Image 1 (cartoon, rainbow, N blue to C red):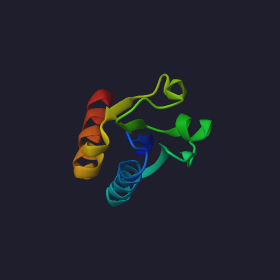
Image 2: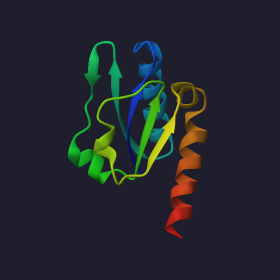
Image 3: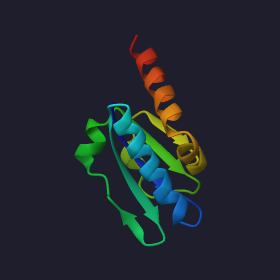
Image 4: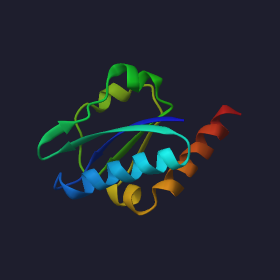
Length: 106
């Protein structure tokens, strides 16, 4: 599964980067690929390209605030969770998403 997403917390510091790291690590552990853009106090980092978005199977928005550029994901399966959910149990989150996507294919 190819995953792209955005992480952003209210302060734009710690939880933003923790959510990104947890999602990327969990994806790798499960044999998936993930690229997570961060939107924080220092701006946007690791920006997603249109090609990466087009190739993605799912978009995860691990956010506690409104993020810029959500319109880029129009037509994609978008999962919205808080940063705490992505940090606390990212493997479980990705397994649930994978099962849901597989169920939709049947």
